[in-house]
Image 1 (spheres, rainbow over the protein chains, first blue to last red):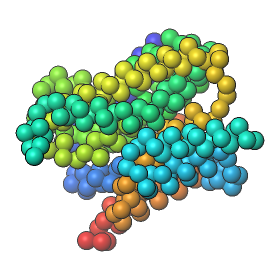
Image 2: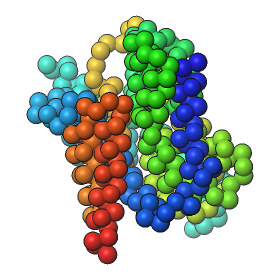
Image 3: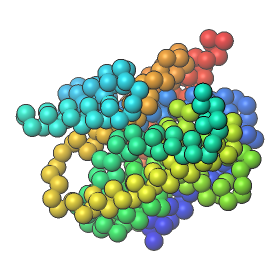
Length: 100
Length: 233
């Protein structure tokens, strides 16, 4: 029942600005901002994954995830295929864990 | 050349499947992690699989599973999931042009597939937003494929939970996939400004509960990118 409630709330978020009140009715300033959403959202997701709930201080200690994501960034700079950075990150983390 | 091919329905389906294949590689460990978490926290494999089919948003699912296993009240779980998934409101607003001129069933049902990877996939193909039928074919193929893959891999994670060793390799796959989509977008100055501000604010505010740090980072990044765009023009 809890999951169904959570699902209903999530569905409402998804459908609100598409079907109920289409986003084209939003003020122009807000609509301009939406064009810049993708890089901001992706960067925030990556940063949150890097630090967890520990704030910027979590970056002081080097962890396998930090090295793995650095490898992923380097691979993403070189190749357009989104699978390659993932494979690089997972390979680096697994190697780190095996060696330590 | 391939002008004829470009406008046949099969093309969008094929393109969506190709995009989905590379995204699925990145998402697979995350979906498996949800299945594993559902079993190991005691919430149960059923709750994990049900959350994948209905909530369909990894970080909110992990939040809900952890809270349920801690005995949180239903209202607290729903409120936390709503906050963690609040970014879908923004994704939906950005994707809305693709839903204009679509049949009613599509406008009510297809938003269920609004999630980080589907949004990221469409941002790589902005031309789709200009043609309702091409967008519909692409979105349904990618969204349904993503949902089926997500649920199947969650179930696999639940089945494998007793034998899988603890490893942070599962945790790193999803952010690596987001990096893979982000890096090519950083050529423009507003995108770089927005990404930098979003990352710093999200990391700094990460101790805040219920994904508020993530949401704050996104909002700050969008504001920074908009200001940077305005100063450049």
